[in-house]
Image 1 (spheres, rainbow, N blue to C red):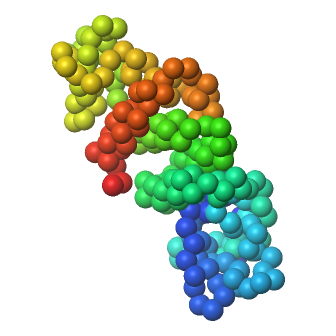
Image 2 (cartoon, one colour):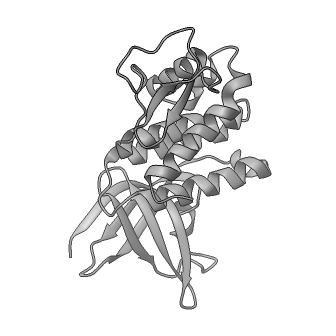
Length: 231
């Protein structure tokens, strides 16, 4: 039986039988896997500490003949324990896990793991407003899904201008000039910064963007809803 050692983040857990659980894990190099964690609900289980939500874990598992493997060992690597001290952050962290579970296939790119890890780390820092984290998370999911907006030219192919107002064509994922459009050069600049930042913490260092964050969060979330299976 093939035994694999990897790092993973638990996306979902389902009770099975009297003491077992089936867990869905996003790994750094093995894609998304489903594992049977035997006896994990018993008080003295050695596996329980390594499959907690909102944590990264070192896991060893045996590949099954079907879709379900068997968890052999699990060790906690990093627990983002501050998340559960705030109700709003806890609920959003659950939403993040569910969303990642929906948009990933059985063999997602390793970048999904890295995005999830960075997002949980951001939520864990109480000094970072959730809107910074939401904007960073949504933009990077859009990037991975291949549906990033055009941040350089408008629907006519002209360069985006500093003084122009825009709407967004969700079908073309391109900004369209409009005299009363809700978006301007400031919105587009922040979107560029979000795509370029390697973590939510980097985006949170940007000054004077709090006023436009809610509209950008809604915009990027709507983009995801238009082009992926999330709702």
